[in-house]
Image (tube, rainbow, N blue to C red; front, top):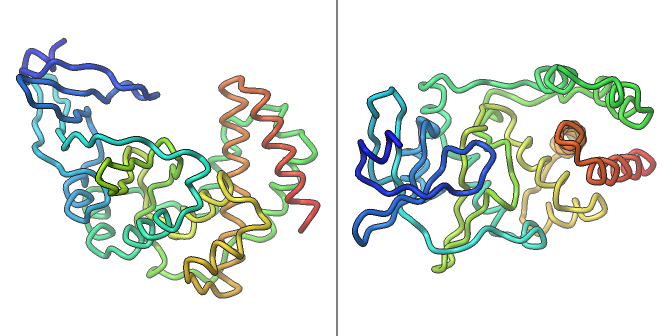
Length: 261
């Protein structure tokens, strides 16, 4: 492999859909290596949101290789995704003016609710487009587009909040990893995604209260909207991957949500 020849590291692929992450071993040293990761990884490292960045190198074929500190630890279990540690690291991410400024500087994409609806509609299979539950949810979102958020509310969002992207080190430090999806948008999108994937609808208010979020009615409506659009995205993704059992379970979940509106 060209990267091995240029870098001198023995590379061992790490599971993932992109195929760009490796464990790098050289002599007694071990690092996490990734090709073409987010260009503001250094800033995330300085904020303590992702493991420490050690070096960055451009390879002969134009790829950018980054090396991060190897953290012995594990990804979180789904049952751990409601913990206050998640809320704390998301608050740290969303409050960082430095990260927002740097992501704009490197050409980070700004995404609006209208963009999200367009992304959902793009290449949507007719099976899903004509499904009565999904159609009802989509038209509900169309009628309730989030309003009232400001430029100050537009923040760096990870945009793939999942247990596989939460790394808990053996020392107890929690990190968010895999920043290829990072965008600039209403920070409540990440909260809505967390709710859609890991917290039962009946427990949303309790989670918000437990973590002292003190959301206004407008913010609560926005969180609800982002939770619904994220559930639609997850249904679409499951369909594309032919994970029909998972897809049907998510549609049943969506239907329960709609019934209790």
